[in-house]
Image 1 (spheres, helix red, strand yellow):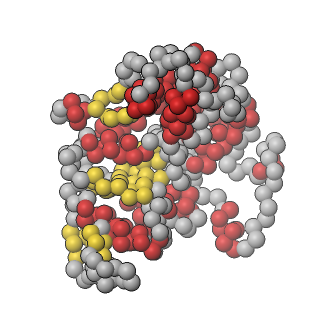
Image 2 (cartoon, rainbow, N blue to C red):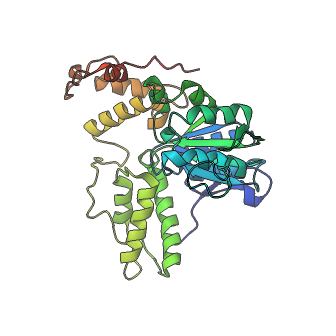
Image 3 (cartoon, rainbow, N blue to C red):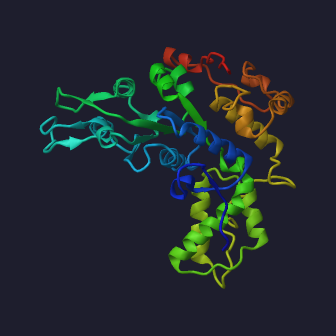
Length: 359
């Protein structure tokens, strides 16, 4: 298989220039890598947003590798994978006897990441009780281990990631506003795979090369109809789903030909072109994206940029589909009316957010 294109970063040497495993050259990807190149040399906090499976950890690694902290610790922690009662200990560490079961001293992730980078994945799942403690470390670069009164100073660059809408969570009162603004110093939104379909052939060839070498199989040909099927699929699981399906295809491949693993998967109808969605799916995608970005249309992190449209094009489509932030659901064709809120808390959750400001 031929080599897949990689975008490189103009830095110190070849090992540090390559954004490892970030495959593709679409306009959407190039825009993200340009942002990575801008923020990497700084020590600023970065918030990487995007759907599940878009490669947020890879981009966090790219930022670290292109920074002056390259070669120093890159420590990661998935906030959603740690039980709530253990997360504080994982972040800040504990002393022996700090709680039942603490039979030895433990060094936390912040301390391990000193002089390096800490990557907090799924930061939107952080419990409310821990959010002010994280805010303090970000502001003061200091903390105490559980069970200790000694203050530890650290020098840590934080990269956070989430597939949730933190701005909406702030409006709903489930995420601290001050922490959100401290994390949101430099936001980077990763495009979904369906928004960078031109990168799919390069990604397929890359994964075929990786898995065929790992399994000791020789794949000599990818049929055109198989590649078209890959490009037409909606990819709700994004690159992770693509990677897993290519691995499945390699396992079942015979005679050096890659089979179509999507033959039993429901295909998304994209009319004559993979980039032309049906009217209903396009309307749903626009609505979903607008809600994700808090109904911001323009700007680098607005809905138009996420969808790959010009601002005027998106406005025209919103008008055509009857999409308006302040329209009640029953005013939109085919929409079902929302049930009435059951209590005060639910009423607050239904309240519209303040209009987002775009510089």
